[in-house]
Every structure is written in structure tokens, then in C-alpha cells.
Amino acid sequence: MRFLWKRRLLHLFFPTRCPVCGTLIGAMERFCAECTAKLSVYSGSFNIEGAESFTAAFDYDENVKPAIILLKNGTDGNAAYALGEALAERLKAEGIDKKTDVVIPAPMHKRDIRRRGFNQSVLIAREVGRVLGLPVDTKSVVKSRHTHSQKELSRVSRAVNLKSAFTASADIKGKNVLLIDDICTTGSTLREITSALKKAGAAKVYCACCCKTRSRKYESETN
Image (cartoon, rainbow, N blue to C red):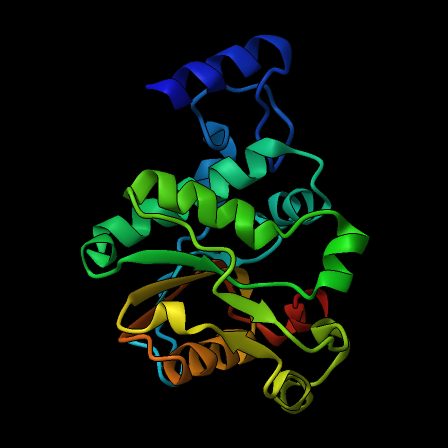
């Protein structure tokens, strides 16, 4: 209830806009009706080594791309709300909320956080945690080694670039983790974090992203 009032109050001073086209929408809406109809719901099958499952809300394409850009730039709070709620709804439909104990966002290296000012995966994870009623843990997994931007690298180089870049604490031992990221391209990031979580004793890891690329056309644009 508190969240609803907060959204409606913010809407009075900062009218909510569709994160895809910018059209004014209701305080609790995610996207406008026209953009909602164009969004491609992810229906593929993808395997992350070591994880129990992989879930995505949308295919990454030109229709959802503007919302992802706003999310990464931090220029529109509704992008995180819209994408996070859509992902949470998908996870709930698959019963993942009943199988997990904690939500963990894919971490960024502290150098990248200083440069950007925030971690977009944390914003998504908070929305997912709110909807699913799960705690969000931003401390148990860290990116302990700085790496090159993934979008500059080939599919093979992405995996090598992230090797042993993440560290998980023993606090995660025995827990079933819902691991959240904004976009999944080759799966290298999720795979490495899953490996770190399992080494730290996590019982199970379920991976989820707002968007999954289905075409190599977009690999140079995504992390």
C-alpha cells in the first residue's frame, strides 16, 4: 500500500511516461497500450551452466531497446519499474518465487559504479523482490576483478574476460538464489556468478533477466 501511494504521489509531480515511446501513462502502468502490443515476450529456451533455470521477460529487439537505454542511463525511473514488474510477473507465473529465498542482482565493479553512479541490475532486483516478497541481497556477491566491457568482445572472449571475476560470501550457503541481470546475451555473466554462488555453498541458483538477445545483431550493443 505504501508503494502505491508513493507511486501516485510521484506521478503528481513527475508524470509517468512509457519508457519506450515517452507517452504519458497512468501511475501504475508499465508501458502504453501501443508499445505493450509490440513487445515480444520471450519464449525461447536457454541453459546457464550450473543454474536450475533461466527466465526472461522479453526478447531484446528494437521495440524494447529504448526502455533498456533509459534503464542503463538512469534517466527514467519508470524503466526499472516497468521492466522489473514484467520480469517478476513472469517469474511468479513460473513459480520461481516459491523456490527461492533471496534475490541477488548481478554486481558491478566498484570502479564502474563510481563512473555510472548506480547498478541497473540492483534497480531491477528491488522491483522483483518487492513484487515477489523476497529480500534483496546486494552484499553477498561482488565483482572482485575489473574487466573489459562485454560489448566490445566476441562470444568466446566474453567468457574468458569474466573468468573468476566474481566472489560470493559464505553467507549464501544453503540458500536458493534468484540471480537477476538486465540483459542476457551469451550467458557468460550469469554463468560466472552462478559458479561463484555454488562455490560459496548456494543450494540452487535460478537466473532471470529482463531481456534475452535472440539475434547476434544485438551482441555488440549488450553487456
